[in-house]
Image (cartoon, rainbow, N blue to C red; front, side, top):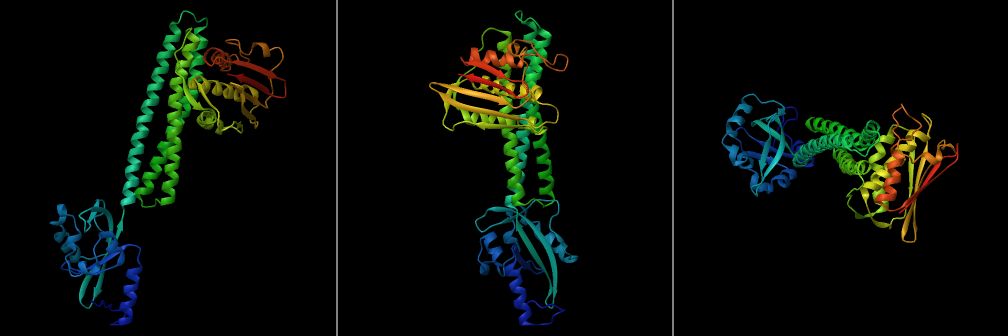
Length: 409
């Protein structure tokens, strides 16, 4: 059928241009008359619905409407032709098209009336929004995952309170008040990182939902946000596990024995996981951590203890080694020493005085009494290295030139 526009007059050339424009459209385009008969389709329509062009021309447009809502479509079409206008179809509702294979496809439809010498037609521009719907479902899944992880974080906090209660009741502890404060300080590291990551993830989810609702979400943005979600989820999961491991490790301070489980790990990969979980804590500072570790070192060890050791060393350096607003550098170097592993943690901070150096592993020794220091961080490192890992730890420091801890296990 030739479509004639009043402004151009009957023209084969004009009809051909119109046909080429319709064929070049990235969206599915079809034209329907007032009786609901399809009079024009483009290549994208064939691809979207799985029909050959010849099979659609002359057919009622209802063949593309799902059976469950087909009986209502004629009334809606008649209503539109009574007052035709440029507008989206079914605003606020989920629309679906029916393919030749009987599969329903989520779609968006834009309607435009075209007045010709043969009457009014409606030109429908149809967009397949399957990928968008998948993205929205992924958002819902991520939001559910976020809620679950937040609940797990809350459970971890509840476990902390239980552990604190147990520590208070432990008869072998000499300074219960200071110890509980130390527990809170040490556990707050993974819990705080997890809560921060969860809050960031929640903000990303909300931003993505708004972009999807306003049809401004591009594929590149979606993939970038998914990567951000994955990283945040990894941080939350790692820190929840570390919180549980830390609670177990703290029991070592209150009781003589601990039943930490052992497993085989790739040492470099595990250290990188620990450093990843500490990244939010370091982000507010100018400090950096460098890792030098062979890729192929695998050991049977207690990961929770190793994680806490590294965390305590980093926190100790950040807290004590550097002046405010300075840009400090911490280095972790790992090497094989026969059947054992040597791990050297060093910083380029202000170092430790000769009179304090022999006491740094003593319980409750701190140079920041009254400023949040409990004197338990390095004592826990010492106990975990000797008792849990079956190794040794040495310290060397020169004031003004930094500090180096050497662990062998």
